[in-house]
Length: 401
Image (tube, rainbow, N blue to C red; front, side):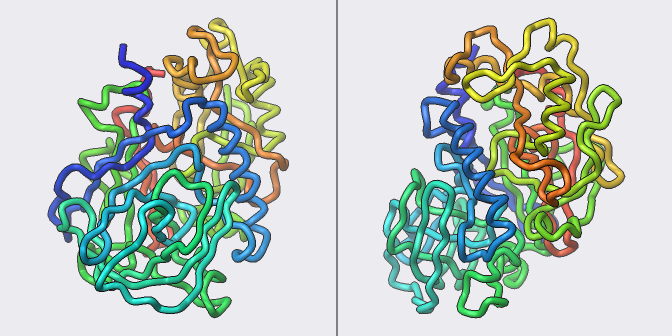
């Protein structure tokens, strides 16, 4: 049995090794996930607040409110910027393409250029305001290098436990944050392609279930340029970005979900996002799931089921493009060794990780496949071909929760 402190290293992308050779091979950076809050119930509360802000943002001007991260947790990568090189621990977020620093560690560099262009983003639980700069950016042991990368430098910020954000979302998400309402800024992968560090603007994301030994496989990794063939099984099946206006701004896809052979979510649009922990579905779909599983809402905000109900759970089946993805019963429950971090959670209690959105099916923003989904399926964000890909891994049917 591993300690909760050891296995709760579930959220911070610490770069420890050398990236792999570029071009045809992926540039890979290992990741570790950590919680900055000792109470996982706080994680759910913040997660839901940011979901509410995200859905509100998708219907308004981007300069209003842009939720990107859960400030109680985050996947961070160590990035070096400027000369002398200063290391920043940045949250990796797939719901933005803007990278910025300075929330904790100040930006100081002899080689930085102040563009004079203001930038500011307001989140569900914080904000930053500052100016766009250009400077060099390095990852890992300096073998991944971006020259004259544009990023925000915070003059003021609030609500962050890390240094800032590394955005891996579509470049279109920067529209409305610059001087011209229609102007966009290049994403990180755009810079890497232009400078011939990678061939394609592709990002691969790999996570593993929380209970698996990290000394054997690590918590996960992010790859640039091409998917890491060693991290998934079989082939990657791709689906185009959805045409639904709200979800198409992000890594949005169309999917259908069944439980026990019955539709609980009809084919509709939503997003894939590593910045959120749980699996969110439209309110009517959640009601059908709750009825089918017999779950009772606990005071901690999670559905609770008995051992007999767990043994009777069916797979959730995700139909995405031509792919069919099996979300086994163990993937649907909260890791039981972390129950001590939940309010009202005994050691043997069983809680479900499916959550309901506030609106019913049909809003065009009807699900969020968060971390609990990505830890079961290798995920590829391909901005060059406007598509998202998924593949099975050795942990797709893991029972460690």
